[in-house]
Length: 332
Image (cartoon, rainbow, N blue to C red; front, side, top):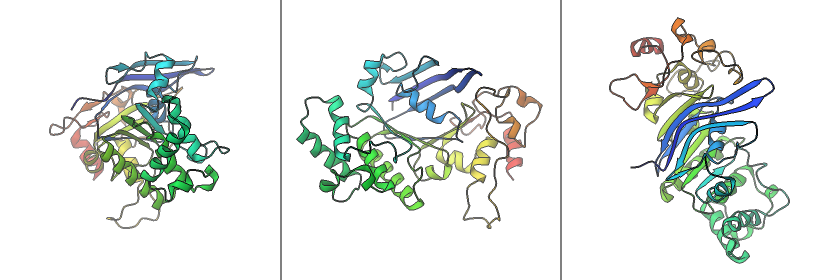
């Protein structure tokens, strides 16, 4: 199946008084219809900047954007602002990180969904957009959508606001859906409901979905493939099973070890990754994870390529100088 979205060597930097802040450095991936691609990593790893750049939301006088983002036959990096406005919502939609502040508090939910529709379909009447908003709210599981369409955002719970945000994102039947931390600030039960909803909509509508999160546990039952980002780069990529059952990068090990496990004896404290993520303005030479990695050695001062290092998993790639045998020993 050919890729619907193809990102190649994407680099995004911002000129600051302290120097160039390299938020994204050489990210490449493909996305096919019906697939859920998870991008995981700590805050500051470049996940959201990469996703926002796809939609042209990082364009500014101080931004330095290089590489290629192709949506079908359309090159988005070179598209002008008018062309990007036609793409946003209609072909690529985004569920933003905070449902508490993503809606305007003084307008009704239905009016805001209708405004998004009329921005692309100015000939649509208010009655038509209202009916479409009711249909969308019902499709994402909001009870009694005929009355809730006239509610204000503060009258919705956090989980319902997130569902309404998903409804708005789906209003124009986009081909690609980007969900940026869609379960932030929601309790565990609602998190599971939102993830199940995204998975169902992806399956029913044939969407190509990018799920951005810092929590590998969030993607365990949802994603088909996983990209692990650190310091603006992809440090490991593979299928969900490859990442969870045979991770190859020490940073991925740290993320997985920080999750509570039901198949192991309970520990007093969860393991944590020592230290803090590096500043994008002053990344260490070589492997960016080297200052925090307990397995670092001299060669880590050189930047390893993102390569397949397992003979039987050519699509499972990582950015670590340790040999597969050394990794197996370290993981025991």
